Amino acid sequence: MSQKTVRLFPHGREITSAFGRRLMESLVDNNIFLRSDCGGKGVCGKCLVNVISPEQEAGLKPACTLTVNQEMEIEIPETSMLSSHIISKAPVVLPDFFLASDPEPADPNALGIAVDLGTTTIAVYLLNLGERRILSSLSVKNPQALYGDDVMTRIGGVGNAPENLSRLQGASVRAIEWGVTSLVDSLGLDLDNLLRMAVVGNPTMIHILCGVDPAPIGVSPYQPAFYEARQTSSRALGFDFKAIPVHTLPQVSGFLGGDILAATLACDMDNQPVGTLLVDMGTNGELMLRGKDGLFGTSCATGPAFEGAALSSGMQAIPGAIDRVEIDPETGVPTLSVLQKSNGKAVAAAGICGSGVISGVSELLRTALMAPDGRLKQVSDSPDRTYVLSPGDPTTGRNHVTLTQKDIRAVQLGKAALITGIEFLCQAAGIPGPTRILIAGAFGSHLGKADMLTLGMLPPLDPDRIEMVGNAAGTGAIMAVCDEKSRQKASELAAQVSVVDLAANMAFQAQFVKSLSFSEQSN
Image 1 (cartoon, rainbow, N blue to C red):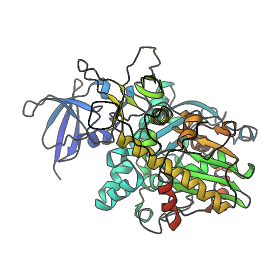
Image 2: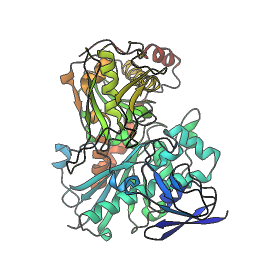
Image 3: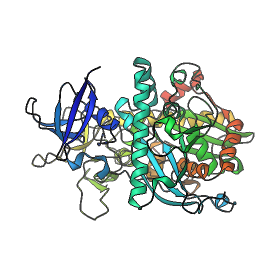
Image 4: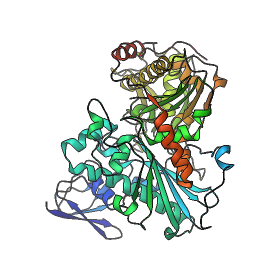
């Protein structure tokens, strides 16, 4: 396959790209990360590059759809660079029982890396291993989103073109490496002090990271190609820094992997009271329940809407994202909370993130601008049913930020999958319902309890019995990188889980359809 040169200005750096390859992919191959809020569909306008080649049509073009068919010269605006838009991360609090245990001996300068490799977002934590102390952390969008919003699409992408496996692996490795290097450099530390890494993620993400075809997960009976915990050299996975061991946790099933095990470990679920439910919310909803006879786990396809992806105005939780909505019931006018930059400079609403979507849809229901069946009432002159949260500004090129009927349907699908999964998990465990709910995940940690209860995402429960536990998967990854005992405990937990297979349950689909309607309760 012929190679083409892409020259980057003003610095004059040159990279090579395969003929016909998307520019965004070629940039990722060279550790250059642009924003990709729409998952590479060419609609968000956040990855624009300025084409300046004299033999090509000049001007701003989205890198995710621009193919490299000839030699090319481009300028990358600072606003398109991912480095200027680090995604806000969920808090991590190491549990007391872990901090009270004896740490493994380590050099005072030894560094560890813990990674929560999510379908949509990658969280990277830099640790001092000797002190079990988090030095710094960041989260970035998973560049694999260029190949699809969910795991099934990415599995299909590998099946359609086997070379996509190495491309997907390379995309995640480059993003993790970028995060590690950024954190180490920001603190003036030395990459040579890296000692080991632990990565947690759902089975598809871990298969791809390890370079293993995830095809068996995509077809019945949806089983992973391997179950065991693994230790692999960073060099074997494609990292450019020094060779260190990279640990991954076991897979429980095709859709329950090291991420929910890490969260289970961090929340000490095997010692929680019966009826305690752990919900790790993201593109995939993963559930772990403490039943009378041990742990019961399942996974439900909540979809990317909960994390702001695949929505008309969806974006990551970065400055400019609406994260909270209140609607005046008399006027129908919204009051918005917009994430701001740390320097205090005001940022206008540019889109809406996952917590903002749930808040907005909850407010539409509360104010009767949306019917319980999810039908958005006609609130504008537009023939499409659309609620405008923030009007655009043609003078600056800022688009309307909206909630559309299609957006609401996406939320309905995710909500129905989640609540139905909870109901069937409780049935399998022989209990009427959860008595306590722990909400984990970067998305879940920013949600309002009242919003979730209003929409019927969770069973009716006293809000005081619902607790936000931050990025529990990230916490478990930190525990796993710190000591062998935590990694062994994760393997023990994996062997204890009774998996509830929703895909094989004929009654699930019928109950799922019944659950599409939003609850009219308000807690």
